[in-house]
Length: 464
Image (cartoon, rainbow, N blue to C red; front, side, top):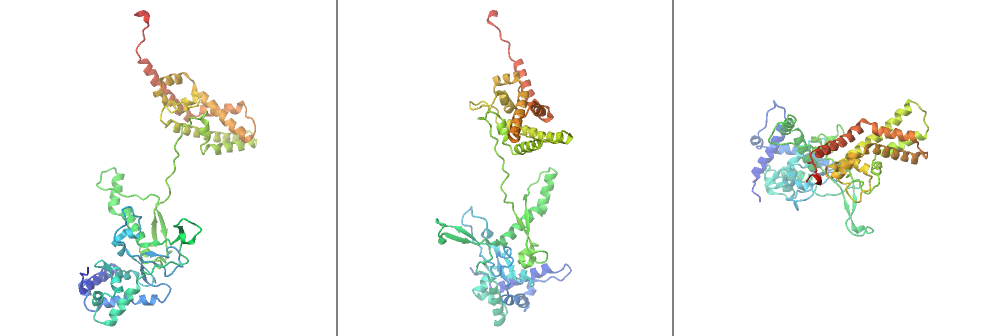
């Protein structure tokens, strides 16, 4: 509905000009006032000076126009292919994909200007000034009489201004041979050309600028700083703050050519934020080796175990000299295997206690004690047998036999008793392994002894 008169449109144009000039003036300079500026020919003089470069730019390679999607961000040699899309009044459905249409009417305030960077591009945003839900550009395109009457009663001046505003239009959207293009199968037959739809990815400069301002506000505003300080000092606060982990920064335009891309790109100093789209770190679910006849089959599948075994086998295959260097390197690789054994044991202990109490379980009893010691808290028979079994030395011997078997497979040479004693002693003598296993062992041993001591005495039938 047209409710704004020609004089009110002139006042809005004058207010825009005054705000622009006052924002550029130094602190001690005299500020302009919109009421006095709207009188006389000051508005027309400013507009003619501003728009005089628009017709000339359209004769060259880089015309001045409004845009919501800029192509130079995609390829520096693309010209005359920037796009200006009208904002959607509302989203099609609540779960709509985020895009420029998500900005709604705000996209008019975030419209970008492309063209000859030697001219003051930010002045051209006057064409996006909103009047009754439409922009100055929309009014000029349909030759609105209210906009024409907002200027002085001079036909030539009015026509020059209206024509210059219309030249800023960029609604004839088109692509370019150097633009990125993707053929997307929209039909069922990939052998038919008509079953493909050509997609042209565009750089949504208006949306990028909105995201840039939002992230800067979340990172550098006084509210965010106050919230971070409160969190650091462990103090309560009425509001929180936003974090953007692994945030990337993309730059366009070089050191001195940021405005050559677009006006908003120069306003951002050539920077754009890239939100992380990397998938989350995958954590494999720990699977209990119920059907295996040895827990070392699951241990062998660990990523760090195979390289360590291969490196140790290759080193021994070279028949190294018996010296300090050989012993140190051998002990280093052995320590890596023992460390992985400790980590593997810890992961098995995080499974639900009692997972070995399954008729599918084929693990020897000693390895059940090793990998599922907390089952003793649920199964008294298992706890008593575990207490009576010296299972830890057996596990060390099993570890040594497994290592020797893997080395024999790689080296193609039989390992003897010295090698067996070395690896068994390495597992049994490692202080970290000893602390890890003895803690579990003694924990359940102490608990079981306390429970047995608390049991009532059993009287035989002879005393009845």
